[in-house]
Length: 170
Image (cartoon, rainbow, N blue to C red; front, side, top):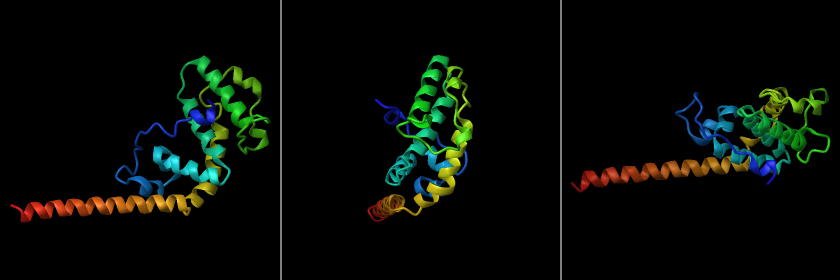
């Protein structure tokens, strides 16, 4: 199994802001809200795959997982995995970060939770100011939004029909 397959889309916890908004409505408020929603991450990844830049969100998600790790041995393994997958010159899913921001391999021996933060911030900003706005205009997003709206309208119509039948059948 590769790191690419192993990355979780999100921890699924609702964010503190905009909790009343759901799905696509919430995704349009910010990239942060999109990345907090497992379905949002799934759709964003699908979009980025078509744009040949899925590695950006995969790197961001891997860094989020890395920051939560406590065990030093696991951190070392994950740091090497992130480096080899996304940052090394031979990386299979190399992310586009500024040259001077690249990590030296020796830092991988003494990992700390924020060691990738600067690079993760670069990639986040790249996604936020480039891919995210295109995603909100994409067929993938718009189709999902329409399906969501149809589902809402359908369930509202069903509840109105149930209320009406209770009123008239009593």
